[in-house]
Length: 147
Image 1 (cartoon, rainbow, N blue to C red):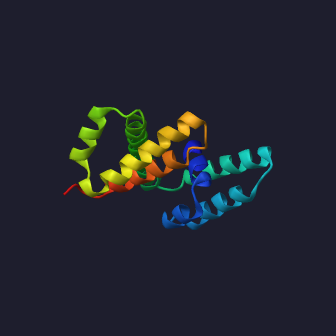
Image 2: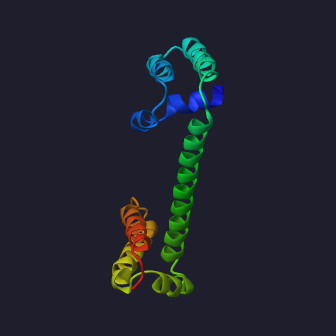
């Protein structure tokens, strides 16, 4: 119960409000968000756990688990994109062939240019502006279906 209470306190406000919590639980969570003193915050979290004893926590737990799964999927996608970026900057020929098969070929030239710029930035120890642009361009390319 206490762990769920901590998760509720740390949720963004919009997501917390979308959960339609019982009023007493919502008020306890909002009060905890305003508390900055460590000991007082700990006591408030314990109070949230006590309030949750009288509430059906199954829907709350399910919502938090769904949110966690969405976060895990987003992180996994970003790791895949980072791997693609590293392979393209390393100029692996197999990576370019695989990429051409998975994305719309119209955007491939821009990705090649960004990869070349990112290699030049690495070689000259400049900030990785092109590498960041390459990541964003890859993300956009993978979101659109290949033709």
